[in-house]
Length: 227
Length: 174
Image 1: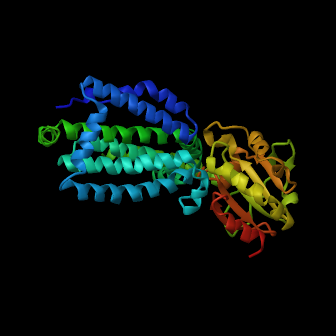
Image 2: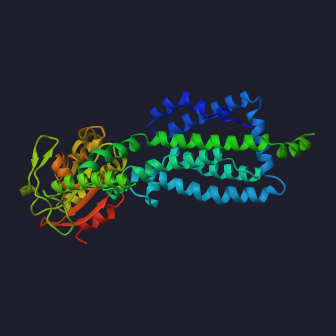
Image 3: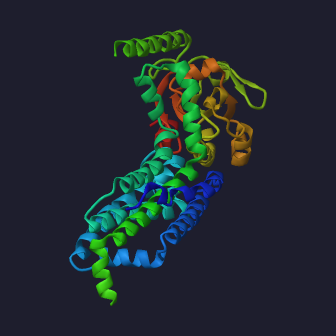
């Protein structure tokens, strides 16, 4: 049984300042990839397992036999629309509207982040479905990644925060001093938020793979196959 | 439960009264005349209502940390010559206090845009607190108004870069 302290999340702490310093999506994505790899290797070493073997085993279990069609369908059905959504959502912050016109402002970093988050979420679901059990902690982590990726484009330069405050009864003077600070933070740290999303999704994939290969039910067939 | 409700009601009332006090000054409403403000420009000059009179103009409130605002400025730069040919002005104003979050200076943004930003029909300035509350009461960065030659506000929108066709149609008189 995996305890919460064994999760790779504490290893993020070392890399988080670097992520916050990244002001371009491409840089944030590569920083997030480096942190995720470091965290995964550290976690695997603590568990005396090889990250490569663990991932290969998990993919073998998820994408073979009776699981094959379902896993491919899940990965495609979730991954393709999710990636398409992010391809528009990430540059929408610079464009000023969630519309196809935002694609003109798509950067390679945005495209990479979209593919990682979109297909990462899809793969996590496929791995979890293959394991026939979902752990609350993994679901939360994936959900966190999705939310983190959506925050900048939802909160900066839109009327979302002023609308929420207006709904709570706050009017102009209060809004003037509050909303700019909120929206400014999301605008300035947009790249870091996307980096956190990438980090969260990659960690989710790893945890799903780790748990899938760690269960007695799924270990036996793999062992039989390698025998 | 009732104490919580009373607390929130009191907060709403306080904010509501403060807002009403400010709203009693000039405000901007589509279909009504634009407020006759004198705007402070970053080159030290003032843009008076007399200068704007008789011109169609784009009144645009932005924050310097807002990514879509800087994108919008580059879109305006691409079309500023066309707007000048149509005798249309652009009044680009930074919200008071940059809406509460520090960003780069408006001068640096104008310099990044290049020569087009110095077009005589493009005015760059900073709103006072009163002007900010009147023109951008929701404190949303990147909000704009289209004002016709009679000084009446005919449209409101956000992100000129994303809605350029509307602005161009206005410039062309369509």
